[in-house]
Amino acid sequence: MKIEVKSKKGLRTILSVIVDKKNIQIKMDERLKELQKEVALKGFRPGKVPPEVIKSQFGKSIYGEVVDKILRETSSKAIDEKKLKVAGQPKIDLKQFGEGKDLNYELQVDCLPSVTLKSFDKFKATSFKVKIEDKIIEDKLKEIANQNKQFEDKNENEKAIKGDQVTFDYSATVDGNKFEGSEGKGVQIELGKDLFLKGFDEQLIGVKKNDTKMLDATLPANHPKKELANKKTKFDCKILNVKKPKASKIDDDFAKLMGAKDIKDLKSLIEKQISSQYSQALNSITKKEILDQIEKNHQVDLPQNLIDQEISIMTQNLKPEDKEKHKSNNEKLAKSRIKLGLLLNTFGEKNNLKVSDDEVRNEIQKQIKGMPGQEKMVLEYYQKNPSATQSLKGSLYEEKIIDLIKSKINLTSREINVKEAEKIIAEFNKPNIDIEKSKTTSPTKNKSKSKKISKK
Image 1 (cartoon, rainbow, N blue to C red):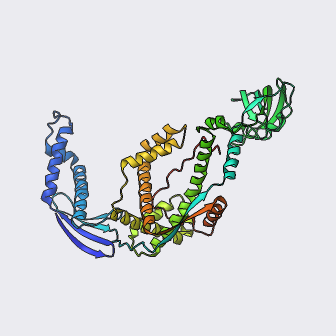
Image 2 (image 1 turned 30 degrees about the vertical axis):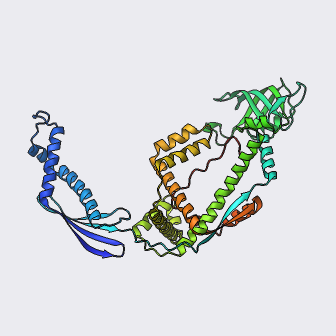
Image 3 (image 1 turned 180 degrees about the vertical axis):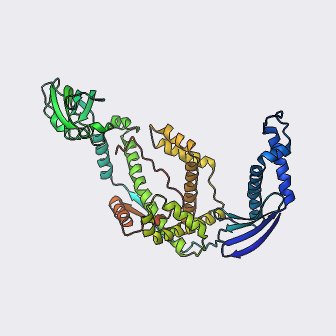
């Protein structure tokens, strides 16, 4: 094989590659011998079909298969030999091919730029720590208690009022006719929440245990049976029970119901959860502050094919007119993402940062623990989607890089209260700020919330 650099301009290198026809013939003969064991033709015993017969029948397709394999192997070897760091998929331009001929092709390679990192010593950023006031924790406790309220039976002669829980059976008709799903047993609704059908709750106010009542309602527009959508319906209801809410005691027993050890532990869990939610947003602000300085202080030549590829990924779900309308901004954003990705990866490699399989597994386990009742679903998601696992690994890698950068810059820690945190986050999320300026170079992790504590 003969490899020459035909041209080199900027980040693009074109190699000329010639593979001798003798080597191609050797590969052809090897493949024919392999096929001799596999091919079955009438008139020949299995495994005894002569190679020349196989070639006469399938020669063109076999040659194409062999050349395709040679192109993959030799192009990879050419890139390694010339020590090129490839950006994206190289392009092959066949100049000469065919049986009995040398294989001659050109390999167009867009290379990754050489990146020189400057010192981060003079970079400045602010990290935030949010102090969660006792009142916020107490309010959250009351909210959780309200969402998990307990009920007790009313006297049989007591009428249902807003906030009560009514249990009933129903039989419904549309135009006097029954329909699939027209009967329900032991249905429970809390009056005032309007979660069953619009206006249904109001008609149950005033009912007592053992009452029967005919109610009018309209089936939803998104009813699974299209013929029933928006249909006026009569519900013949038998009231089985009426319950009133019990005053919730926020004590150790209540905390245990919510999955905590005691009330002190529950308050601590609530504080951590609220703090974590604010920290995620505030960390994004700190990260942006750092990335902006990194980008501003470095000049990097970018391969056009990577820019085009990034734009394609970013705009794949946009209409053609929207792509055209935001063409300039999308190109600017694509360049920013690629530039930062190259800079951060260079920093990671320079500092020998890696993410182990154990670290990925631990992160998956952390997500599983944060989603009680959905453990199997989360685990199966990662098992069936290797790309999701790879994305998670990329996210952890970026997190390591940012953490190390923080240790090398002038990072000021600032303690703030919730009100200050909300103001800072609101400023950051203003519409006139480019929402894409977070410039993340890997997919965002799944941020899990504790189902036991937060019922929202």
